[in-house]
Image (cartoon, rainbow, N blue to C red):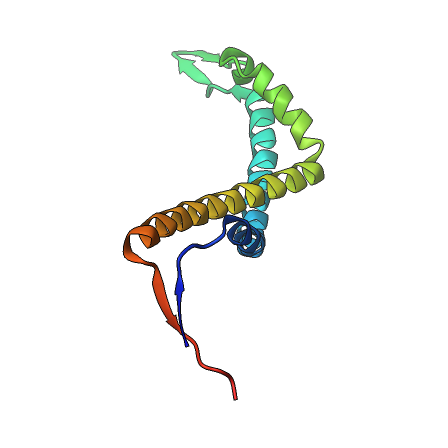
Length: 144
């Protein structure tokens, strides 16, 4: 038996690619969310270290005099205007578990949406080409 595929329905493609997208994007989404949460935690520690930054000068000997300078504290977070960023990172750093879940859901949803969009565009292109060329011929035989 010979059949021709003239058109592919969008609803079935969207359902199929949504399921495939969830399966395919789950592991990369989890890995990327873990990386984002780790970077967020490191960023909080880095900003805290910049706030407690101090410059120490070695003692200087000028003739018979010995000059010792006390450590000079420098708040780089304030000097660089990163106070608001430090507050935001501190708030997010306090909810790393929720941030991991949110990042994972967003990344999986974006990956799935991209896969579905690419599939819909491919099916639209096939459906337009099938009108002009008559579609793809499929040969079927009964299973014995």
